[in-house]
Image (tube, rainbow, N blue to C red; front, side, top):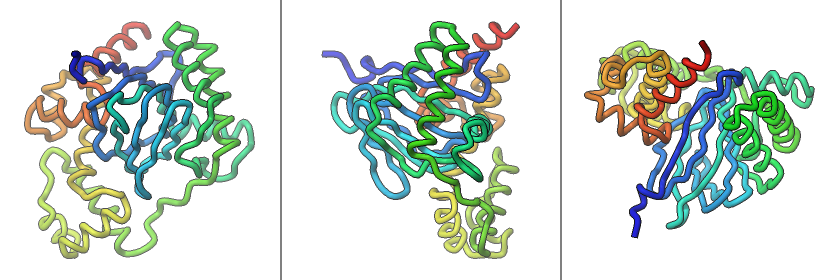
Length: 282
């Protein structure tokens, strides 16, 4: 009998003629995504199995022909909802890309987003898969057209206005200041107590405020931020070992573990896909 890892596969990549979009198509069985967030949107189409998505409001179960829609900077996790795992195609469009489509169709005012996390939408799911198939076939015109049709459809059906992220109270402002300090000192961050002292607050008050605002404690946020920074370094051709050192991971294996649990593929595979794109761009 094959082992779960042998039944898993994934490709996380970019098409050179589809700026502002990352693509992931995968089957996962034992793999789990740790709590993290994305700068842009997540639009996933489940084609088989069951995925359990951990959202701030609770677990969402996604089955075949479901579409999962996650707004920027919303913390979430994911795991298989059954022994067969789940198969899906996911689009990661940037905020600018989605906002541009919303402006073109004129369906929403303000910053666009999604009011629903999950919807049973066979046609929407098929459109997301069609974007992948067209991109993988090298048909950028079709992929770009289908992408815009898919996003416009989802915004029309499930769209809403994203709330402002401007800190509204002293706790939120303290959390924002803590996040800025952690981002600045990513490779050598202070302890929670040291961070609290710099911000003239207590450790527990900072911990509570940070979790309330960002949906995760500071150390989890820092790991996510390090992986984001490592992605940029890998896209520029930096070797995984050097990227690990630059962002503050202990060693490459430490980067490998966290990167794979957040991005869905190992850093080496991620870098190879970006290197392939850079060669095609020349």
